Image (tube, rainbow, N blue to C red; front, side, top):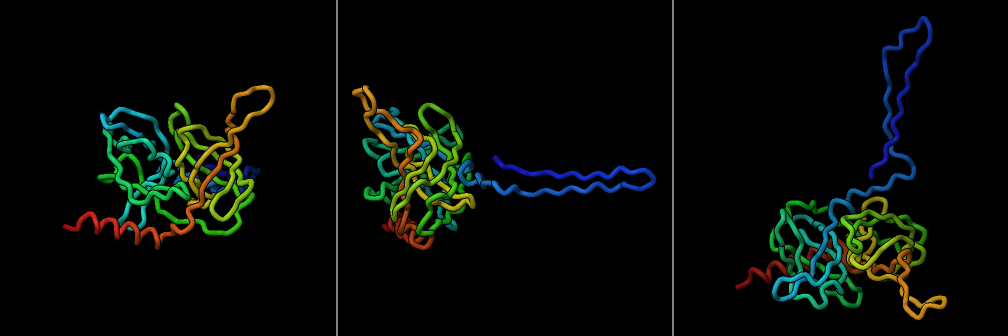
Length: 235
């Protein structure tokens, strides 16, 4: 949601001409750029060989120059014969370019450009320490439609961070953005533990584990996509 502060100053005093109305529009100090998260969010369906739905995850439609791709979690590919997103009420299948199981990050390319979803510019935030930063992501948790969440990074390491926010199964693969619209990471997992008298594990929906796509800056990723495209067109 875009938040604007609208200031309208109207002077009314006896004997003076106050025919001019001054408008000032500014972004408040706590403004968060959520356009990239909302516009690019996609639901990724995992299908079996017969095309039946096995489950779903989330991801984001991004671009580097002329190259358009989807970033998601690598574990969303597990067990699925095909991956697809719905565009104009039809499935568009996704082709894997990178499956990085160690970082749990995958790069997929749609068989054709999506029309319902807008690809947003991919810029990677590369600050070493991000603890305490406000972040934002959009995804498809559980049975919900596209939902937007903010969070605070409570701890981080070189390749991972923990975000105090909200997620459920189905949120995995959502790209996390900072307040300037730069990519910070990818939702990976929730904390699971046994507490109290219950013998059953419980999800901690407010502790969200994420991967940082170190090594996938614009230049590196552009090279990967260009080499993949050339290999596809080679006889």
